[in-house]
Image (cartoon, rainbow, N blue to C red; front, side, top):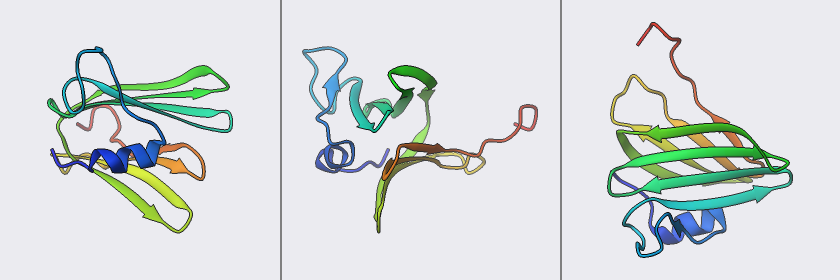
Length: 119
């Protein structure tokens, strides 16, 4: 899996990665980044070794959306343009549209998936 440098992820999330297990350091094991904008917050967790990611969104401290075990990631790309900053997750199968996590100016998720039964 291709992914940005750790410094780019720290810049994007304005946070150092927090390991799931204290004895593991980047890039080993599940590592989490947390970002808050206003009342919205996102927890982005990534296991660089296995290429799996997890996203959890909070509104006013309450969990609203959780997308877990995104597998078969091909690339993670940090995007910066004008006032927009975000992370794009692309999968290794072209049938799946990329997942876009906007981090600035607001936290927003965009992902177009096929209807059930079409897979």
